[in-house]
Length: 216
Length: 167
Image (tube, rainbow over all chains, first blue to last red; front, side):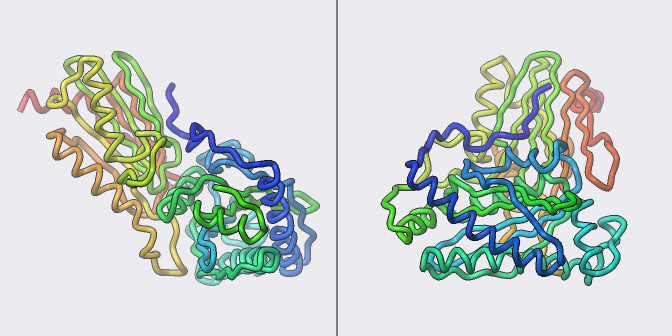
């Protein structure tokens, strides 16, 4: 059986210096720390995250969220612009999305077909809050002007969502690296998967903002 | 994503979770040579090198044809089936206009197949659903499944030629 799911860009062989890598880690820690704080305030539940990874395009890593690339997921995608362009995305497995809905609305849609306007805007709001606080923290840290754009919602197979996000990011510029991590609450009822995908030129600007000369 | 695979004789290919990407299956019934590609974008950007050829329709489909003819297939005999090119993300109730990657991919694949004079037996494209496409080259059957729909046959690339010969 030949499977045409998986790799993307693994043969590019691009390397970043240790300094640049640790700067990206720090950026992810700060940005996500703020984002999770906002999510915790919104849901009244503490959230944690795994150590963020700085890696090649993350479509191949989505199995950390679910072993099944055909599993139903809810995704919030938000392009950002300003001094740096790129994409932020959150993916929640269906059961986790339902938990979030119950926290916010008191009840949850049974199936994706039941997701009405209220549920849609609640999920978009979650994405908005997480992403905006991530961007605000990043902006403080790097002194760069970063602007969020309206989030978009997708409910589909996780593999299809992840590859569509990557494709969308690739359309704007050659994207090489992404920050990614999984998040979870204390009771492990909610899991999510976060990606920050700056454009190639954006990555260089990021590093300049941090005082690192790096040809990304 | 961006993979190209070809085989002579029994084979099975699958593209799991196609969003805006396109899975294209080709088959030459005379030589029993099959191939499949998972196209991500329509065109290779001019400023890029070192990219997998199969990622882009304009470089990947010619490469797939080259590999298949290298095994002995003939382009004029090939039969095609493809699926994908969906839009998964929408902004509230309206679909975003920037996310037209799927449409572009569909147009690019269609154009390349037409210019190579390859007959398209069946396609399942566009819409809002992610798809998993499986090509059983051994039997010729191409199946599609989505989250809302159980696996169903899109077409049979082996039977299609019999039908055409009979006609």
